[in-house]
Image (tube, rainbow, N blue to C red):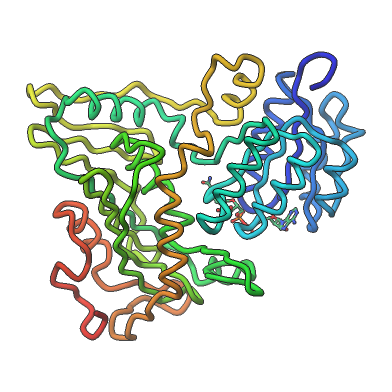
Length: 382
Ligand SMILES: NC(=O)c1ccc[n+]([C@@H]2O[C@H](COP(=O)([O-])OP(=O)(O)OC[C@H]3O[C@@H](n4cnc5c(N)ncnc54)[C@H](O)[C@@H]3O)[C@@H](O)[C@H]2O)c1
């Protein structure tokens, strides 16, 4: 911690999603809540970003290096944000812990359950904390939905269904060597629609359900690919925790992009949560229409508050990701996704569309069913 008590925060990975972190970090630095300790990325930041950094008080002296290890050794930050490819999370987190830093690690926190256990143990041994980039965990609407479920406001929950339909160009899968890969140079990556872009879908559903950190979670998977080089871009998963089924059906090859929806099927009510827009609607057992408080707490802000006052709980601590890691591990063990036959694909070259995937996902979430349990519009896929 600096003499003035403001945490010094380093960012590893400044492009891709790192841009969001860089913005957040500079916003907090401008308010005086943190200091930027340094940035590291083999690709230098955009000139405009660098200009904004240099304009901050003390910004002219902030080191910007290509090498993360050299940066960490040099600046020994209080907090390190790891926003790099999935397979680099654990090695970079370890380097940060070795110089005494707390961690903010992007989701999925690691590429396997074994790595998750190693990271958890090393964080505990170092006496540090770790926030994970499940930003929906800061959502007031999500917290409200979880409270309603815990209070039995929709009666016994029969299950939770989630559907997600996003449109990704083929370029999304070729933007980096690790994109859509299960492994790279013998190291697990475990990228894919379920574990990366729609990781929030499953993690948020588990949170709404109130599944405890140490729960056993059984996972059934049906994973397909059209544009992804190895992993899934269209997939369904059913997680069963303490007898509760959570079905997640997603595609990155949709005809139309929609906000993903979490549907809580209560015996006496129903909730619908759009976790990307913090919108909660539905009806409770007594017929009351559900409304939710707007907005969300930004996870880096929450972490800074937690470090200043440990009575403020971390909103997305590593331990809370354990139920989600059962999905990552199941996907890793499942291996490459199955290619869908060409007859299942429409759309032009740059933007493949899986026939009927939008509607099928919605049906899976409604009926808590996997693709194979419904009439699938892809003959020869099963
Ligand atoms: N929370 C979210 O909503 C969200 C959204 C997108 C991505 N992510 C996560 O963010 C992470 C990065 O994903 P991305 O899509 O931005 O990846 P990307 O490949 O587009 O960008 C990663 C950046 O990290 C840099 N990098 C690679 N190795 C590095 C190293 N050793 N040290 C420093 N920098 C390094 C790369 O040069 C690149 O600039 C992943 O874990 C991903 O799952 C989170």
